[in-house]
Image 1 (cartoon, rainbow, N blue to C red):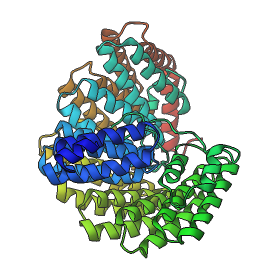
Image 2: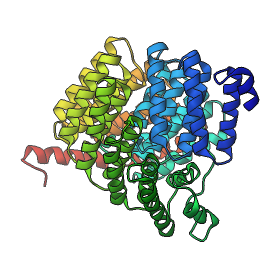
Image 3: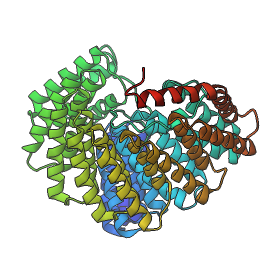
Image 4: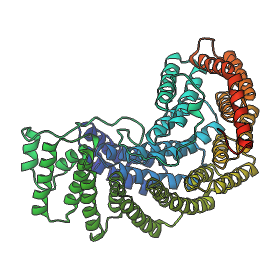
Length: 579
């Protein structure tokens, strides 16, 4: 690298390539901090030379985010990658390969930062674009797999099971029997967790999306989707030579900070945690309470406390970090933003929803002032605030936030966009939880009207129809709910054909809804039709074929008793109540 620097200068392509190689070598050797520092300089140089969307600049950004995640700084990697998406959306088609790649990386990073619900929404956007485009291939499978994992993280096991089933059906068409079996096995496990029998039923994929679900998590995926080098799950005990290194290393040492960053990759035992606390105290004495290295170390200490189970202590430590960063000169807005997001995460995990909402609101105000109300980071924070309101049991406040978010997203993407439709679904969930199911129905009907006005009928629209069906049920409109299920099936049949996996999923949902509504003959007829279609694309002994056959046999066997029970209830209702 030195030779290239002397011969060509610091910003020459060959010099920057050499620096990229040096950064990779340092990262592979475990020096994540140093790799990220080197790549930050390379990225700045590449942006000056060819602009932020040049191939070399995009690659440098991706590698920087990779090593930031490895160093325990996924929040910084997320902000860095969201910045790239903003630039791409201004210059590239929104369904281009580059934009979809970046959206997928952002979803991985949201999982790593504990924002699984945000990952779900991002991946639904990617999936809609992929299905509308090629609709097949490795990207479709990879996106479905990512989405299924994210849905599991937010607790939406019904939708997760459906995604695993669709993934299995896709592998059947390749064919790839081993992967199809693995995906189908995961779907069966999720059905069991929902209370059904493995392979048993239609209900697992037709239950409504929960109005709220807590999302937490950490990840070891880099921004590029590859696995980062595995750091130790916990730092060494005090008798380890590394502990002696901490005690003797110069305060503020980047090598020590790098090792502290690995704390976020796994649980920390009490002895190690005590050692880290002593290290932070020594650095405070040597460098000062508000020294940048001390604040970074305190951020890592907070993560260690949270991973060890003391979420309240993690939030308290990060509160101090945020207060110090607010007074820092010069200011460090990126670090402040990352610290606030982690503070909100641990506050919410500790049950301090009011504190988490206040933290996110402060970050939202700062980012709005800096980037404007329509910036992707600002919209992400507002969605985070709405989710916190839902988790706190205040769906009315969440609904208010979703309305603001919908208005802003409508301005940037249009009233009929998939992003707005997804937000309308979240708003509907909040309204149902607040006891305002009638408003939820009107919200979803208006969203579907706006979507269909553009001539778009896609997976996002089908998902909204499904949400409408359950909203109508919550509003005691059984006939309207069944009509929505029938319309969802009709659309899939028309646009995808009779044996497409999503058409079969819609038919299955309709059959089960009809059975729950007491329309037993219609349910049996549609289940029989589903069985015949399953047989036409899968063999008789296929698990999905057997599952439908078992349900159909059970429904036929109980038909007469089900009809008699319905009749007794109807008579009881006319007399003023069932006995």
